[in-house]
Length: 303
Image (cartoon, rainbow, N blue to C red; front, side, top):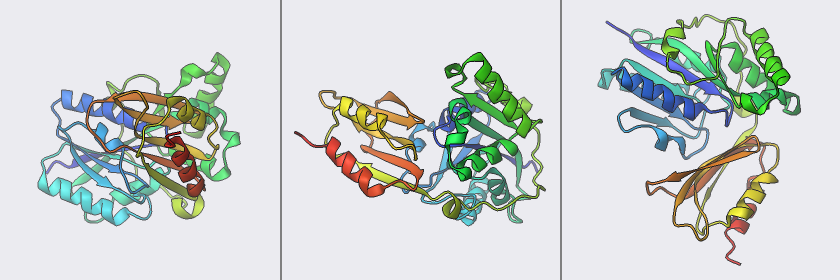
């Protein structure tokens, strides 16, 4: 019996996981592989699930993290996928605050070991965030190090924002943490050939995202279109503990809907052709949810 492969996709909030996932799925489908995705969000609403192709089976695990509070649900979803589908591979996109090795634990139960095998761990990292890691809290720095330590293949994003010396320092520091890691900064066209089977017999300390990182989410439903300049001013002055914002919004005097992605001080917009709920999800460390609600309501003020 051929086992279904599992590829775990990790990386901190806003480091490019969903973009990498889309590239991987395109490569898999081009090779006629049968693929499924399990997407985990720490909030109650999934935004990134809209980015997954209709050709790929999708399961969502919301309002928790598969590395701790949702381990049992992950096992159930994995078993359901392999029992009801003929699959070559299942991708698990973790939350941005998941500890990699605990996700590995969640994927290796007595019930799944006969039908599933972990092929490897892909990770993404924002080079600018790593360069400024000393400005982050100790728990966030620890999480970034753990994600590097237990990865087989690391995609380093936003290297172009760094000087030559800064690039060298970032890459050398990553290699010093995990000398066996393969580092990429290009599209993952041949990533499958670079993955080795991942050893799961590693001693590690448990890392509970809820008690250690104090990660909170806030979801805002948009009722009135935003003034784009005021929206960008809001993001420009966003608190440093707001790690990530993503969702779909509309702007005044513009009939289009936009997929907005904010991370590490950078915001991007993509036109969205589908009719989707207008809402954003904010993720951060001890973020003031009430204050965010007030600020978003101000943006909707018709005055």
